[in-house]
Every structure is written in structure tokens, then in C-alpha cells.
Image 1 (tube, rainbow, N blue to C red):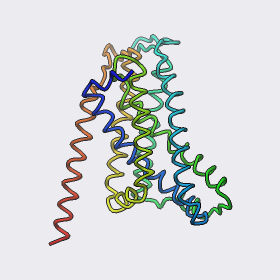
Image 2 (image 1 turned 180 degrees about the vertical axis):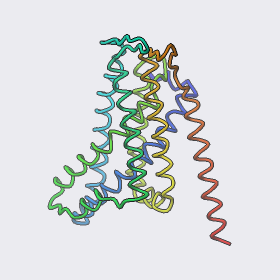
Image 3 (image 1 turned 90 degrees about the vertical axis):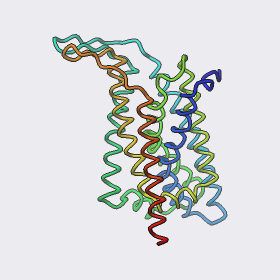
Image 4 (image 1 turned 90 degrees about the horizontal axis):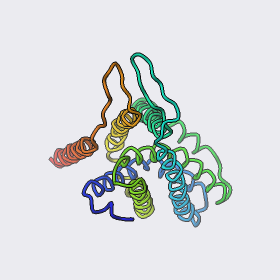
Length: 264
């Protein structure tokens, strides 16, 4: 069952995915904190931890559902035109529309963070929460909205890894569990770190653009798409891992340089 961990690619995918899940979960932590802050002080920690636990369960269930659809590889409809050939399967549809969603989500989030105030956050701040159960309901709804891009990111990062379909699912579930546990332990420090370095969140959203594009090309490749006689190939995930690692290295060096400049 865990033979996948004998592969170096699996460990790289797990570490990268866990990091992205944490960074992409920052907005989730912020909204959960806003909801919990409206409760009496003795209930706030309980609401935060319970909300994140429910978030973990919810994401695992979503992973199981999405992974089942991604596993349906056989085409149920074939398009054969003079310039286009494609076999449409549920796997291809999930990856294609998931890629489009990530492109839309990431670009809109970047636009909002650069040009507009957080309207959803302001709306939530204005809502009164009278009980722990009401707070949990709001947290679960909020997490469901934020889970979609997280799940699609996980699928994009692990699709095709391992010899068996369940190999990728195991990696995704482990990454989600680790990221949620880390957020439960270090929710406030993580939020403060991102507040001090907002470029990290923009960097993660930029990674989503790469992953979204990769999902679309992967869908075309798995559908055996031929456009004007040209077959669309798969993008090796090593390129994605290298781009993410290189970008993070540059960002950490930039952060270190800023600290030195401030000290001087």
C-alpha cells in the first residue's frame, strides 16, 4: 500500500503539496479566526480546532470523490473533426474544468489582493455569531469554498504518480492531514508570517496558474487530443517542482536581503 514512498518523486510531491496546502490554507485560517473571535474567549480555541478537524474530514471526502471521477479513464464520447480528435472521459473533464477553475481562481485572487479590499472578510466581520454551533456551521461552509482549489491543486500535483491509482490518493490524504495538523498547531504564527510576507501568498497563487495550465494540458494528453495533426504531450512534473523550488529559493533570498537592508 505504501510502496509509493520508495520513489523520490513521491517524497518531493508530498513535501511540495504539503507546503502549498498550508500556504493556500492561510485565507481559510483567517476566516476561521474571524468566526471564532466572535465567540466567548473560552470557546474560541475549541471552535478553531474543531473547525480545522471538520475541514480535514471534508477535504478527505472531497478527495475520495474527485479521485473516483479522475479514475474513470475510458472515453464516453469521441469527437472526430477534420482538425480535431479527442476522446472525452470523466477524468479529462475533471482535469480540464479543474484547470480552468484554478486559472480563474488564482488570477481573481491576485487581482483582489493587489487592487481590492477583502469584501468577503468584511462581510463576515459584520455577522454576529451567537453560539458555537453557528460558528462551526460558518467555518464548514467557508472551508468548503476554500477546499475546491486545494483539492484540485492536490490532484494536479499527484496525478500520474505511482503505478496504482490509489498511490496518488494516499499522497493527497497524507498531505492534507499533515497540513491541517500544522495549521492547528501553528495557526497564529503562520498567519503572522504571511501577514509580514504577503509575497509568499502571491507566489502560491502564481503556482496555481502553473498547476491549472498543467491540468489542462494533462486533460488533453489523456484524451489523446490531436489538433491540426499535432498530438498534445504531457508536461513532466519535474518541471513544475523545479519551478516551485527555484521560485521559493529566490523569495527566501529576497526576504533575507530585505532583513539585512532593514538592519543597516
